[in-house]
Image (cartoon, rainbow, N blue to C red; front, side, top):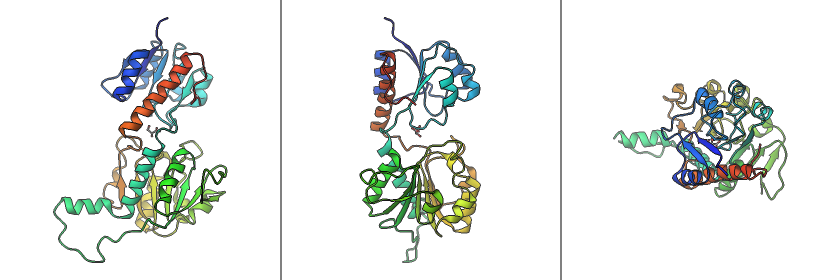
Length: 319
Ligand code: DGY
């Protein structure tokens, strides 16, 4: 029997590409440029499966033009806001993602951003690097202590829980908002809040871990920033869509928010140029899941889903 034809849209880890080439009639985009709408539509007529990243957009307009040959979109990401799931389902296309395997790597970046934002990492690095470090005093670069502080987590899924576990290592007092309360085994010692607004009132540190959906777009807006304790620190490793960036800038300027740690932006790649002059914003270019181990695990999880699908089974991560 001939192997299914698979289009891999980006340069994934070597181990992933080797396995894909072994098991599929695969075409890999070695140029590693994001797949355009036109490329996705053309690929749908030539491939049975596409293995994309969050950089390829399967919006309603694209999905409407897909060829019926395409049977499965096996995402190399946990977030699927780049996919119009109802449209894909209506077109009879199976969609999967890669949960679990990136939770620790992403939680590590959330911890890095929280610590870096709280302790002036951007300004500190700059003054040492540029030779501008010419004095020291007890009042110099005084930050906000993380250990023992109250932490609010919005979205207590796998990444939120991995972050809570790391925060417990800093003796943080963990509070969370989630659509439903978790069992004490899943959220040990954490305090549940039934509303986002209730959580914000105690969130000296706030970390976002919910998916981007129409309901969560601009979840953190001007009204919500005003509910935070004065001098709060906000961290976003989820999606840029969750934060009204103008409202964040206003909250930073007023001091309501002392600092922010951001791995995600409304516009990616690129970010928000208006953030550049603010050293109390510690920024990274969407690298939450970017460790070697996690990239292999994401690639293998996507291939596991494809293998199950083409074996006539239900993929583990079907959406
Ligand atoms: C994810 O998996 O959603 C990460 O943001 C990388 O795409």
